[in-house]
Image (cartoon, rainbow, N blue to C red; front, side, top):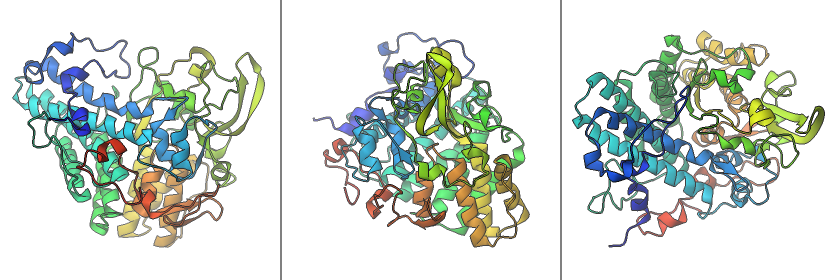
Length: 503
C-alpha cells in the first residue's frame, strides 16, 4: 500500500514527538524524559507523567512556522498577504510569491504551516483518545484534556481560515484507519469541531490565567470570542446571533479582571512580562535553551546593528502603512511599534539610519545588543484584541453604547489619541476596524480580519475597500482567489483533495 502525505503527517505518533519538549516560561531546563522511541503509542500511556508529556508535545508545533532565517519564515505569509509588509530578502522567494500576489501551491510557507499544524492535531488526537483511560488525579486529567482540546481547536481554526475545505481528522491514524486518506470537510463542519473543543476546554477547570504559558480559561474564552466573531462574518455569515456570542465571551474575559492593558508598549517586548497582564496566551521560548529565531527577520539586511550574525531584512512595514497612522498616534512614534534607526554593533554611540520602518513591537533589545539569543515569546491572544473584539461585536448588535466606546477608547487612550464619541453605528464600525489594523499589526491577525470582513484598509484614503479589487500601495490587486491560500501541491497530488479555486 502506498502511504500518502496525509499519513506522513499523522504517522508521527506521540512517542516519536515527545523529544520536541515544550519549555515553559520560567523553567530553567527542558522537561526530563526517557528515550520515547522505545514506546508504542498504546503502551506509552500507562502513568500520569506520560499524560503531561503527551500534552506538552502538542504545543511544540506552534513554533514551527515561526522558524526564520535567510529563507524567510512561514509566519510571514500572513503578513505579506495584507499588502502592508515589505522585504529586502531577495532569496526568500516564497515571500515574494505572496507579497506580489503570484502565489502557487508550491509555496513552502503553506506546506510548513499545513504540516506543522496537522502534526499538532495528530498529537492532540492521540492525547484526547488515550488520556481518559489513565488512572490519575481526575482534576489534573480534566485540565490536561482541556489544554489538548484548546490546542486542537487553535490549529484547526488557523487551517480552516487559510485553506477553506480541509481534512477533518479527529482520531489517531494508522494504515488501517478510516481517516488515513480523509476527504475535505466543509468549513462549517470544521467550525463545529472547533466550537465543540473550545466548549469542552471551557468546562475543564482551567485557571483564568496561567503565567507558566499553558492554556488558561482566559485563553479559551478569548479564542472562542474570536471564533464566534469570525463565524458571524465570511464565509459562514451567521450574523447577529454570533456577534452576540462573541460579545458575551469577550465580556466574560473583560469582567474576569484577570487581564489588563500594559501601561507602556515597551512591556510588549519586556521578557519579564511574558504571559502576564495583557499577554493572555503566547508561543513559548526560552533564551539559550529554546530561543526564538524570528528575531533575525525583524532587523534590516546587513546593517550591522545586531549581535546576530544573520541580519536578514526578512520583513518590515511599508512606509505607506506607518505613515497612515494619525500624526499624534504614539504607536507610530520611533521605537514604539516601529524603528527607523539603531546603534552600530561595533560602536553603540553611532546611530545607523535603516531606510525603512522595521518592527519593534517584539524586538528583543538584549538579544540584539548582547546575547544573540532571545527568549521573546510570540503573541497569540492579547487583551487589546479582546477589547476590540468586544467593541466590534457589541456595536454590531447594540450600536454605539457606552461600554463599546469604553473598550475601543481604552486602546486609543494608550495610543494618546482622543476618545471616540458621537458616531453612528456605521462610523464606529469602521473606527473599530481601523484600531484593529493599527493596534494588532504584524501579529498574524490582520489578514484573518480582511477575509472575515471582506474588507481591506486603503492606506491612501484611510477608508476600507472591498477585499476583491483592493489595490496594494505598491501595485498588485487582490483577486477572489486570495481569499484562501492554495493547498500544498503534495497534498493535492494524492488525489483526495481538491485545490482551491484560482490555483
